Length: 241
Image (tube, rainbow, N blue to C red; front, side):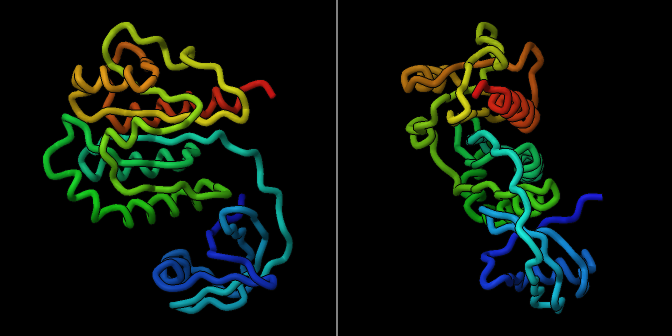
């Protein structure tokens, strides 16, 4: 059985610690105890470590050895139009498990009124969800969960490949929409309930974004986000070196 992995702020002189609410979760929920071995990461490198002390407000680790980081994942930004918060949280968790690099909540024409303002207060919660999902999926790095953005900001993204999902007929299948190189980055733009309006489609085209389709079915926004990420990640991992 694979060891659990936890994120630490830094490893210094062979030691690291987790404090506050995160330490409470480890000791009271996960029942971490002194002498147990886990993996820890500082978002750059990973180590096998043993727990030296486990108290309610602090868990201290001693490094045993550095371990292999694993394969580098493609750099993918998910721009997801705001939807009901419980569904958005599910999308954050699953996108993290899939390996997304960055998640940006966005305001779209058909975003439900009040969600953009309410999202400002939810960002820290979404970051905690992303960290827990990163630990569960044994990622080396947790994704960046950004503050909510307006669509005009999103269209200035400089990723190598910029793709927006279109539910209308005519867009090429996502799996054939682009052919990346290993060093390429990608941005995926997913709309809200009800989809994009024509004015937004014109904005995407004018900004040089590529329309792509996930097929004839109309998917929920969170389903479309995860399906698109799975496709783009596999395309990126299979890119010839």
